[in-house]
Amino acid sequence: MKLENIKKIACIGAGVIGHSWACAFARGGYEVRLMDVNNDLLRKAENGIRRNYEVFVKNELINQDEVAAILKKIEMGTDISWAVEDADFCIESVSENIDLKKDIFGKMDQAAPQRAILASSTSGQPMTEIAKATKRPEKCVIIHPLNPPHIIPAVEVVKGTLTSDETVDLTVGLLKKIGRRPYVCLKEVPGFVMSRLLTVVLREALSLLKKGVATVEDIDTAINSGLGLRFGLMGVFEIHNLTASGGLENFFKNYSGFYRQIWADLEDMKDVTPELAAKAVEGIRKELGDRSQEDIIKWRDEKLLELMKIRKLI
Image (cartoon, rainbow, N blue to C red; front, side):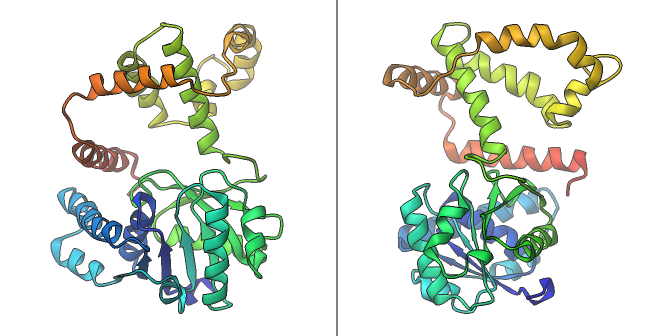
């Protein structure tokens, strides 16, 4: 199959990631079938898709006529065979349960055309294992986005041991066609790149909260008004390349001792106790006040688009 032959996309699972993928591909010009066994979730997804496009309209990226045309490209249903029967690219976005994902992949494999690529949005499960549920492991691949994928461009593409280079190349090309910025992970490790980096930050944030070093709100301030501003422009190696005159090489010469002291003091936390979880929940409730999840998501998406305009990512 060639990139130009990919016309139809199946999105399995209508949750936050699934319907966000539907938004991205429909806006990219593809016909999309969005499937979920839960009709209530499909109705929520339809409302969510409309809200997503409203944010694009508000930011003058599309107009109402374009929204009407894009919405016509999205069909919804509860039957997985219907969703994938004529699809060229199928995306599974169900919960992080490997047995459930393998079950979905088995059903997609049975009903989808032999040409179809089967992809997973998993944030950390191995494709090598998921693909065992199919008879086409060479056409199975991971496309892990950062939420919300209809806005944030980075997507990590992860192979299983039997995934073909052709599948990876087609997947990367497809993602680029809808305005994503994919990169290929060179090894299959739990959590890939983005989840591992985010998990490390969360673990240390919880450790600081547990030790009484800072409150939830202050830790978030350190990110959203400090580190996060730089991360909005540069990656971790780019940032440290500017830490010392002479770049990254001099940084390692001059600061490695200081960093070793911090690394030695970091907590190797393996689990979150109920008490610590309750403390974090209490802290975020205090920080957010009476703002609803829906209001926060709308604000987040609008600000992400503003930032991406500055970065010229859209």
